[in-house]
Length: 264
Length: 196
Image (cartoon, rainbow over all chains, first blue to last red; front, side, top):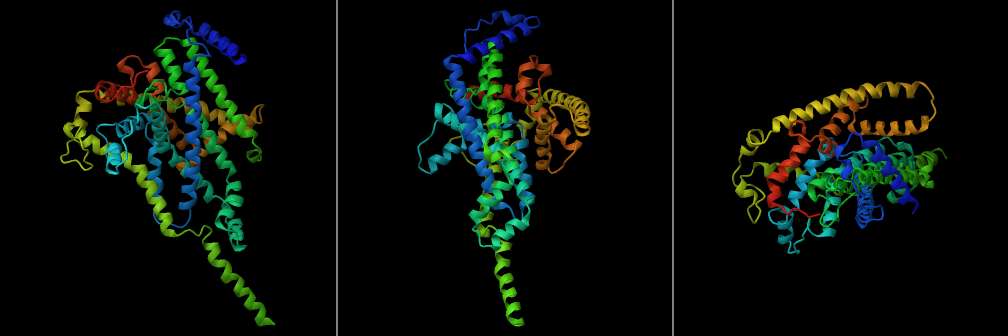
């Protein structure tokens, strides 16, 4: 209830500010309110997307980084290749994955058919559409996590790891008790970057699903964009954006408040 | 007595050395498998993108899908310049990116200098934010002003949301916006267009 009133204050505030310079603002009729099912669905989509992508990207990135860290041939080439996805325009990623997930002409369905698995309506089934955009985001951002954690791993003091190994600690114990605590600053940075980024994700989703089907992938940015440019409801779109900002800031605050992370 | 001491010392090093050399005693082959698997997963969609761009239109929509195209064409690379205004999109992107780099650098350098020299109120917050900035160059393995400029350029280059929102006339649209238009003009008609 409190948030509802706040969002109205914000949207009015915004509406007043943009009125003189935006002639079509008069069309805004605030037909969407904070309690609208569309917004609640958008928020749910956003939180699922954020939680799923961050969980997968950080844990997979850490696992790969730990496994490929060390004296191996070829990591330089690998590092260069891993730099490619984070550098590609998200719009290209969205286009490419929309194509890959195409149910009639594309590779993934052919692969599933060859493996005698049932075809999946990737982008037209609400649940699979969300999975699809998570996959695309994981593809684009996990390499960045790998590189971040690799850089962190390589700056660790080797003596402590070696001392633990000499003392007979298992590799799992070393990772859990020494490597991971030493990597805390890097993990915090990774989580912060991803929280900020997931709340700004737009391009990939817009190219792949445009928030559909039925709003199943309408992340906060997509919802705000649709409100603003399909509904011409700038006041409410601004309110949605502010709420998203407050939520992501709150998540960052929680991140800082966690005891495990506080010492960094 | 002397011999016993030196024996113990030798024992300790011979036990410690292999463990220290391999802090994660997982088979090297398995680690290479992880490395190669990660790289393959990373580059496959890119390879697919390039292969698709080289296919003749009939092959793109062929069922079943052949991974290696039977015939290859460069025509699409010519078409994006002749049929669509790619040169215009590219030019707009370059202008927007370069202008952003210049302004961001001009604005950011005095700010960074002030933060580094003086301890102002809110210092911690800004330093935390700067820490994020500083982490990115570590990834790019090239710290400093140049890296900041490069990253700003890349982010601006690939931005869709701001460009899509602000650039209403085609004369001002950047490549990501143009790309979105390609999709709605060509493949959009064929692909499912999710209703909202």
